[in-house]
Amino acid sequence: MARKTKSESVQTRERILDAAEIEMLARGVGKASLEQIARRAAVTRGAIYWHFEDKTSLLQAMIARTKMPMRDLRRCIGQHIPGAAPRELLREMMLHAVQRLAGDAQHRRVCHIVLHRCEINDQEVTSNRVLEAMFDETRTALLALCEEIADDFPLAQGLSPADASDMIVAFLAGLYECSLRHPATYAVENNATAKIDALLNGLFPAPAGTSLSAS
Amino acid sequence: MARKTKSESVQTRERILDAAEIEMLARGVGKASLEQIARRAAVTRGAIYWHFEDKTSLLQAMIARTKMPMRDLRRCIGQHIPGAAPRELLREMMLHAVQRLAGDAQHRRVCHIVLHRCEINDQEVTSNRVLEAMFDETRTALLALCEEIADDFPLAQGLSPADASDMIVAFLAGLYECSLRHPATYAVENNATAKIDALLNGLFPAPAGTSLSAS
DNA sequence: TGATACATACATTCGTGTATGTATGTAATA
DNA sequence: TATTACATACATACACGAATGTATGTATCA
Figure: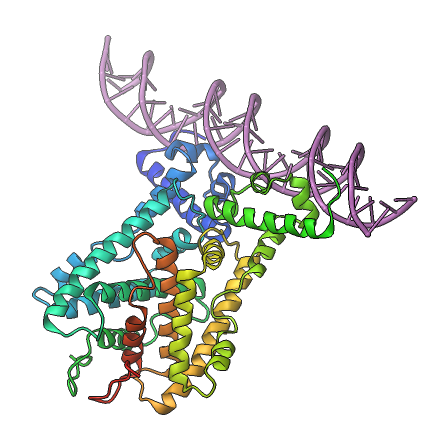
């Protein structure tokens, strides 16, 4: 009805973003109308157009509110376990990604929207840029790690460090796919450490008799 | 402008489906208008509404035209290599999936549309059903194979056959993700056999000194 | 000659964007 | 301290295009 105080308007903005998450998740970005988002946030479209330029920038803001997977993960983990060997670092990163995917509901929602509720127009877009950047960052970070690991451990026969990091990228991408698309039947966090260790042992096979998974 | 012969009308139908593939891939299912699809197929919307009920059934027909990944793969491979050990069968299936993903352009287009150019409305839908069925079939087939393999080979420490098949599902799903989303930088077929062997060796580690990858 | 394989034309819906109205918070002024 | 003036935070109303679905026309095949 009228002018609100600053903190109230911030709350309104947040409510709009929350509502956008829910509506876009349920109906898809394209079919979720601003009217429905507004109604869920208990405002009118006027409020949305006050806080955001259009639907695209609303989506952008929604994405920006959550940290995307693997972003800054290496630095975080590195600070958390200073001096850790690269193989341990990689293991921790993967474990961390799985845990966040399993536990953080908002992260799940936003990733689900960006990955599966958003028709991408090759040239256009927001979420496409986000995905590209995410993919590239993840890949270069993992490649660097794999190269470091390869200094200490032999790679599986016929694999280059790039191959190894590509496999890890695919595995993680697949975990997101399966866990988000089929949450009822596919539980990522099930036995996560054993799975990750199995993959890493396949990529960097331990010399006979050595056990790395129990480190 | 007028009545065509039966075979001509079949050709028209195919042209419409081809056009739909291209337009939906480029703009997304939602933003690809029937007008644009018609124009690309050199017909009018009237022709589309003659052959299909609406856009949804057009999409359905498009999907039905192509074989989806992993479908019937076990039977095919089984016939191809009769009496093959389950581990070899699994290897062949994965290899086959990668090759099709790398080589079959129409398969790539349709999968790309279903996976990434289609906003899914949880209840609704066509492509969602297709995906669910695909996922379930793939999972049960792979689980059965992994259980058979586990009779012959020890599983990695702490892994159940279900864990192993879940990892394979995730890996394959991730390959589709990466290869379709980032075709310019991510080449699935690169070193495919070495990658698959590395994963399988991680899941079913060979006793020390044994080399399975060279079988 | 009737059914087929479309083209054409029209009505209707839906969502967006924008322009405008309006009541309140807030800072400056006196 | 009360008042003024302006910016803020929305709500309301309208204009517009785009896409869908349907009804109807029409030429040709069988």
